[in-house]
Image (cartoon, rainbow, N blue to C red; front, side, top):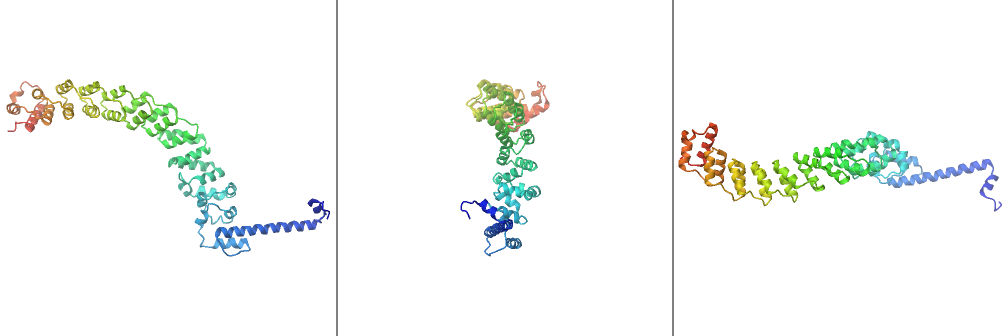
Amino acid sequence: MNPGMNNFDYQDKMSEADFDSASELSRFSNLQIYQKNNIETIRRFFDIKMHYEDEEDLILDIMEDDTIDWNDISSRSRIPRFILDEFSIKIIWINVIYNTELTVRSIIENKIDLLNEFRNNSRVFNNINNDNYGNVLQILKTLNDYNLFIELYKLACKKKYEILLQSMLKLSMISKKDINFSYYLENNNSEIVDAIIKETNIRPTQEDLTNAIKNNHYQTVNVIIDKTDLRPMQYDLTNAICNNHYQMVGVIIDKTDLLTQETLSYVIFNNNYQMAEFIIDKTNLRPKQDDLTNAIKRNYYYTIGVIIDKTDLKPTQHDFINAINNNYAQAVSIIIDKTDFRPTQEDLINAVNKFRYEMVETIFIKTNLRVSKLLAKRIYRDDNYFLNYRGNRYIINLLRNVLCKYNYAGE
């Protein structure tokens, strides 16, 4: 043979029969090598010691072996593609989906089995969580079945798997029309709202923020303020205060500078003592002396107590006298408990003469003051004492009962 002759030249010199014979021999040789390699791979994968010459015999023996743990086999991190193909009847696909890093080619070639598992085995989606979704997303993305995307998206939203949700949105698996942002916004699903804002260009409106504040969806409001340029308005804060939505007021206080001294005065003026206490505890704002005086004038005794307890403010002597003169028994009681102010004997006699039984009882309970024995008996027993009083007989009897209970009339 000419040393310079190439393979094509040599091949051309062969007869057609010789060429066909050589080609067939080559194909048979390659097939033998392929089958031998498969046999060795299968033996190693299933840890089989016995030697096999025929791949089919080996596969049949494995399929009939009741001692093989197919759960364990299906949970391997790597499963050769031809093993998936050959043993698909025995393979537990849910384990493969969660534990095996399938190649794109394996996913495509096992598409029917995988789709059947996703569609017919509810445990596939029910077992998913924020930690184990990686393989599922890779498989679904390759299978590209949009109905399965939607099913998983709804599940992630329902169970608030925000990491899974963010991954789906980042991979653009859900179209904008199916994200349903308004629904999750209106239902205070703050984790879902957060994920959607992070991974898409969908944004809430100022009206959405106002509605969230009205509905006391403070978690969602917190997300909107943190993740967008939207901010509450003054009327939003007023609405939250009027509705005693403490968490919402707290969010707005923390995230904005809307709260002012005038706002605190408004709260006190409306006798919203719990909100006043909340604001005093959470901020550096403090009531003014006028706020305390106005609270006393209106007998806002709980608010009076909050201001005295939470600040250095104290009522004036004039405030105390006004409370007594206006028969604000509860306010007088609070002031006596929390300050050094005390009513006088004259205050007591005036209250008796004006038949202010609640004030008389308050003074009796909170101090050592008493009316004289003579006056008490006269009031209790002498109807002529009340001839000049045109009030309700019921009130007269209430005053008599107070005197009887706390004074000397019963002697």
